[in-house]
Image 1 (cartoon, rainbow, N blue to C red):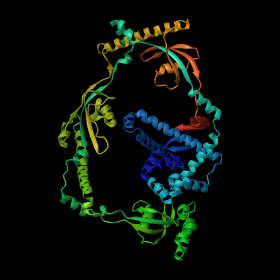
Image 2 (cartoon, rainbow, N blue to C red):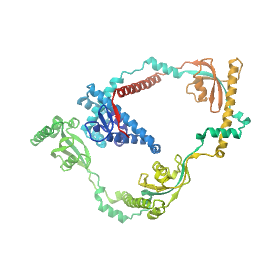
Image 3 (cartoon, one colour):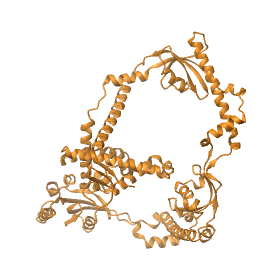
Image 4 (spheres, rainbow, N blue to C red):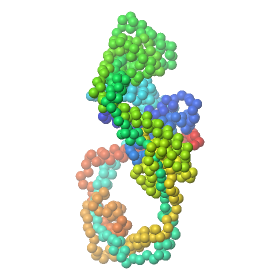
Length: 615
């Protein structure tokens, strides 16, 4: 988990948070792992349930991670329900593995102390500024993630305990120096080769393919000549952006809007808070009594910062006299928020209860709240009015589009009249090759749905994202089938011609091999010190050269024909660098560790009672 935070901390905090949210499975469904629930279980591991809600949240996080990694390609892949099911199953298997590790750690009595968690947080670079722990940064990251310090520490405990077990089981993997050096020397070897290429293209001139040969190939390979299912569509698209372009705004409208919404154009007020926290724990009454005692000390004249250092159970802020961070209104727990924004500077509150404990809150400072002038925000107001008017019209037209396309399901004409949109159409296309104007996975899925294809009805309104929707209906539908022989005959003839030319090239290469082995002199091209990943030669020749023994010869198929390859000499690696050896050692270590981890999980699964919910 901390590695994911560390990776996400490169750049702005906002960027950090985005990466954190979509990568971190440690933050996913942790609370659902603890305690009992009446909701359905996605799987049961040795009697402990993994709730469907936890799986769903983890699944959504994984989809978000893959979408950021793959971009628009993911949307295309996600249109395939089988692909999404495979991702979901993979997420569930990871959650089962985590559950097995947690159970094993508990059976072994593994524990992580509060001090260890504190030290890990203090030493985590993502929470540091200029190499030192920064409590404000720490709290800002947690706040953006939507976590309080207690819940975060609980997740830290689960994650660190799990890693403690994994490290104990697989941390003994190592790579010998001689092992990585041997691999480096093997990879660095070169070969002295000779070769002769027999191109297939010259043989094509003398080859003929009879009609009955082509027909026989066609009849024997019907699967190679399948014509995909095709449709042509009529469709309507509605976009808020295009509607916004039609909206005109006057200076008078903008000024009136500014006067009516002046509060929107103030610099947000921020308040610097400090607190003294008493965790709820197992005895809420005792916690309340302790908080009241601290409050009494304050009333008697005790220093807030000193009490925070000695009595607050939020030890991180306590070391800073209770200081937390600058907060805008509405960010913190409602009770905390109400108390903070009801204080005057340097005032402290009475005891306040939240879901995380009892707080005494102090207001240290206030900033912001200045009013921006009309000229400063004029462009922003123009854009806001356009966007608001466009969205109002968009939602109204969207409802008309939905209603009319449903009420008149066999035509888009009435829907077009009701919304003022133009009915557009496409030519015939296959599912895998849609025209650019409708190349949206959700739209393609709707176009090939049973409702549109088999029933001949308008689709439901399809959300294309960014306040854009569409409705489609089938104009023409052609079922998948076998292409007629006449349409594919030329391609079959070309293929069979190529096959026969390749056979002729192969036969000549084998004859050359026989002559070489018989001692006959051949005009071969020599190439010295060919590296394993040489890019000058055809990869097939290089691969064959690294398969042969010294003095050996053989033929190999190439894209353009066949080749005779002879290996004359193996050259040892020259100047293997220590950096390469170290890199290979790390790579081998990672591979061994991965194999060991898989072995641990497989072993735990073999001994466990695991049941999956019926789909």
